[in-house]
Amino acid sequence: MFAGLSIMVRTVQCVSNWLTAKLAFLLPVLLLSAHAYAQQKPATSEQTNQKIHELAGLAASRATDTPIGSGDLIHIEVFDVPELSRDLRVSERGEITYPLIPGKVPASGLTSYQLEQKVAQLLIENGLVSHPQVSVFVKEQNSQPVSLVGAVQKPMVYQVIRPTTLLELLAEAGGVTDEAGSVIIVTRAGRPMSEQNSGAGSIDATGVDTQTITIRLQDLLESGNPVFNIHIYGGDSVSVPRAGIVYVVGAGVSQPGGYVLQSHGEQVTVMKAVALAHGLTGFAKADQAVIMRNNTDTGQKDMIPVHIKQIQNQKTDDVTMKSNDILYIPDSKGLKILARGSEAALTVGTGLAIYRF
Image (cartoon, rainbow, N blue to C red; front, side, top):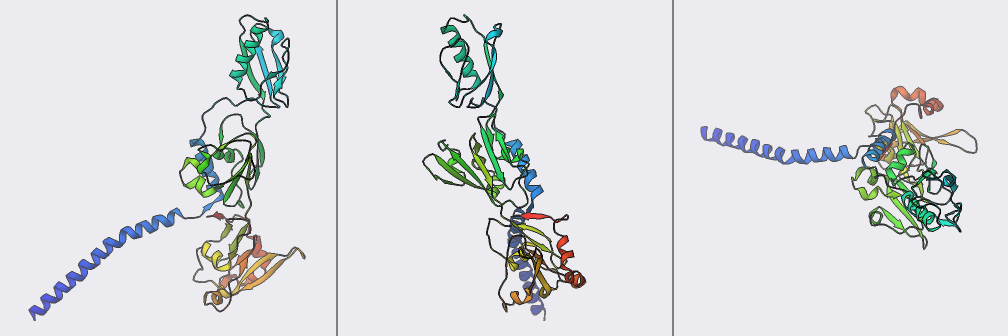
């Protein structure tokens, strides 16, 4: 009897030791999984734009002189010679006309300091001033335009008055809108590809002197690699394509909200939308869900019944959603609202969080 009891004790100890070892092995795995899930949590547009502003401040370029270009209004000051001090507009050919100096003076491509040296040299060579002290500064910069269009808060034409990065440009425009897609497209003409830009996303040389650089927004914000935060130059065109949003609302889902499509034309099914919304609640009436879809012909919303349980049980095909569709999943209390679908639609856009992945 005691021998049997001893065997039982040893068996329990072995099982206990095995469970302890098993837990010790699984704990790091579970912690890593939890950490990975936390990194993949969706971010709202407000959080995305906050990160854009934070990173733009950290990665600001060092101030240097921007070259003068066509259309710029410059002021030339010659100390103690007021008749030679004046405002001048740089011509389309990149030249200025300066009094008492024959011919045109090339100015485009020079910095303010370089033009100061050039004007001082010309004053000496033409016998106008023996020891000139020349100052040049740009009063109006019109030669370095960057157009920023698409799904940004403030589409704009931005004058690059100093070295500027992509993050700084996005921050200047107030960040992206809710419907911004997952990529940023920079179109650049007449500038060779730098080493910094060579590793930034996908680059397509669409012409002899034209490049199209495509950068994933997630790489720009999350990778920590400065190669994605490319420099933006005068003449660049920056576009943030719109991708559209699908909405999942109702008390039958765990996280109601709007979910940004990754790119224009992306196919999102009902089951994927439910997964993005963190699944169904225990009280969801899954077979009484509907998709509310804008009908351009009638100006009304079409109500498309969706039987989620049947889709889960593979008794019917999954349903493809379109941009701006509203998937409404009620619980038992929400059936009365479902009968008045327009009321459910009103919840969209009134404090509903928009998530991007």
